[in-house]
Image (cartoon, rainbow, N blue to C red; front, side):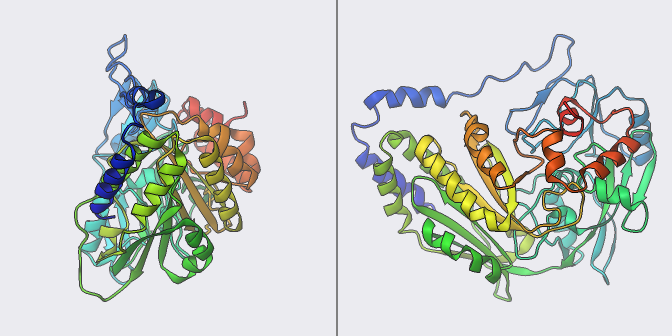
Length: 471
């Protein structure tokens, strides 16, 4: 959205908000709500240094930190380091996958392309490579990933291990492009696996939460480098919802963001094109997001006025169109920190669930201002994939990192669960082993493979014990 959006929202809100900000203690409430969350100590009583994730909700003081430079070094670390041993990428998961009082292990020294095949458009990549670095590296050899997530700061291993995904017609999550992988087990063994060699490991560990071992490299089935046209438009939410089944079929990549308390949504489509390059300019999404926050701050207790101002200003925004290589446009910068819950539902349940979520938020949580993200993902056959054997529609609800997110569990998650949703492995949820076993047809098979590879549970921190072991 262009910069005019923020100026328009703030100017309109400022005129209407004269005399409102101080009423009912709103100014004081916003002051308290905008305080930086209390940060954990930089080190614990034993002098161990703090690790925390991107949003700040997960942290730990590991006894050992390691950064192997080779598979041989990694194997030795896995054999002798104190457990739990937890691999860490960029820390963009909101769940407590990483925290450990034992060993924190990064693959930051195991990055880059290993090899590629120009005939098949396949590339073998070290698992510590960040998606943001992989895009230009693949472009240099005429390839691109089939899809990318909204944020590209993740490592390859972190992205596939949590089922990270983008959106699109018939397009699978990142792990859906894997044709072969290598994994170092807690015993130090290096396993090569694909659909013919150790297929049970391939099927179980493609989305493995770092619980089966440490992925060291993957071979990706990519596609020829394409230029795409990205179109962004602001439209009435009801129109977008009604058009959603058709939009999913008409565009290669499509998603929309519902803006609560505005009656409007932002649609984003991406399609292959031969139009000349028209690169996108500086990021202005952050400014628009903060404008929506300011509007919430002013009019939280007068939602009808908030809705009227926002709808009037948002309706004036013209569509935008940019053209460039896909890896430059599919992912975005998200400097404003937040916490998130995302579930993947059967595609036919997506819109009914979205309507319930939006109604619940607008009825009971007038403090919410973050957009609600809506995407579509193709089915795959990885045993622990949230998209296992079904086309899925995802719904993601966010909360500003300085504000509480308890409503995720009391209000939003019950709606998702009623609609047979499966949680994103990297996003907040409250499910445990018994809940998850009911949602995944191959849960028991995956659990058996995990026990065989890690019989002593050296890869399981407290959080993963709740995920894989019965309470």
